[in-house]
Each structure stands twice: as C-alpha cells, then as structure tokens.
Image (tube, rainbow, N blue to C red; front, side, top):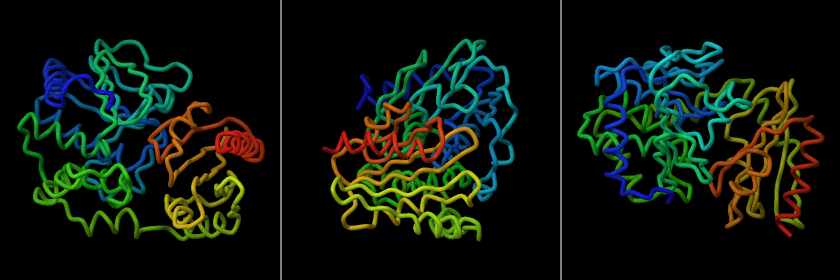
Length: 320
C-alpha cells in the first residue's frame, strides 16, 4: 500500500480538508467506468449533505450506460470545469488522465487539490494525497471513509457504491477482492443496494450494437502461443464493445495476458488484463497509461495497425 498513515488518520485528514471547503469540484479519469462514476456520485451527495456546493464535472460525458444510478443527470459536461475552491480528483493515478487535461494537468485556480485514488504508480499530484492500492475499488474506499466519519449513506448512495465495487472486482472474481470488500458490500446491501438490479444494469443491458461489436472483436481474436498472450481489435468506425470482450478473452485457458485495441478518432484505447504475475500496470506506463497489476490501460496516438505493432512488440520483449 502507498499510504504512509493508517486509514483512520488518512480519513481524518480528508475529512478535515473537506470540512473547510465551500465549493468542491469533483473530477475522475477520462472514459470513466462504473467505479469512477458511482463513487463520485456518492461523494457528491455526501458533500451536499455537509452543506457544501459540489459539482461532478466530466467533460463530454454520456450517461446512457449509467442511467440506473441516481443523480447521474446532475453531472456537468461542459468543456471546462467550474470554479471552486477545492478540486477533488478521484480514481485517477495522474491528473493528466482527466479528460481535457492530458497536456496541461491540473488547471490553476483551486486553493486545494485532493488526489484520492487506489491505483498503482499514483504520481501524488495533490496537496493532499489519499492513496491506498490495497483497496479493491474507489467504491470500497468511499464506503470505509463514510463509516470512519460516521456518515449514514442512503439507498441511492449504497447502490452507487455497490455498483462501483461489483464493476471493479469483476463481480468479486478478481484478485483485488479482500474480506473488507465483502464486508463493505454486505453493509451496502443492508443500506439498500439491490444486487440483482445492479447486476442486470451492468451486465444484462447491452445494445444490439454492442453485441455486434463483440462478435466482430471475437472474430478477430488472435492467440500468440509462443508468448502466451491474446489480442483483438476494433476500428474507429465499428460498433463499440463492453468489458465482456475482455472477460471472454480471460476465459481462454491458455491466455496469460489479454489485450484489446479500440480505435478512436485521435488514437487507440488499449486495455490490458493479466492472469499471471505479469504486472500490466507497470507495462502500461511506457505508453503513458497505468492501473492495477492485473488490469490496466493506456491511450496511444497513431493508427490501429501501428499501435498494435508497437504494443505487441513491447509486450513480446517483456514476456521473453
């Protein structure tokens, strides 16, 4: 764990900093997932309950996959963030991963910047850095913060945090799951989270386009037995896919490392998964990315073809 203080000391520092704030702007990483969205929404409600002005800002965000979460319509999607006195960046190992900040990092104008994260290789960009890589998810991290300060969350927040945990743990199947993950999840169900509703919303609500994208990606599946990795790709004009493509690839018995390339207008989103001790978070760093030991990602400039060649050559060198 990166934390130098105990969890309670860290939580008290975070609580003290937020207590003095008047207007908190919350930001998360680009192309946000359920963990980032659910955690940030729950935190926004907490801050408002403390009498703060709080805005969750996600540049260009589309809520279509998150509409089962309460208050998702409150997310501000303007090109630039609002002006507040405190900036709370959640679930982000570096400020350069926030949409719109890839070249500039944290914008000026905030008197306090708080970096709250659970990823490896966090670059400690905040004035207050609350980082624990032992947490399964931001959803779990936020739950334990609420418990530490004696805050009683409501059913909507419980659903938001439970969805965050379920997503980032792969339905409690990944190596980041601990006993505290189950304890937090059980408490969230007691507080009103409905596991069936969350599971259906995340895993059983795909569009026809997503299914077609999955079929295309699986049709291109390539297995490199010499090095033990599997990869596939989608071009920018092809239907998008959900995380299911990675889960199907993970189910291959012979696969050790999995790579999914998704072409975008200005580059390629690359997702890595590992089923062994190979650290994909460290590997992704060379491409400006990061994440967890078993799950990471990066955004790489270039065409799909050129990025595939570059990344796979580096991967083969690393796996030799």
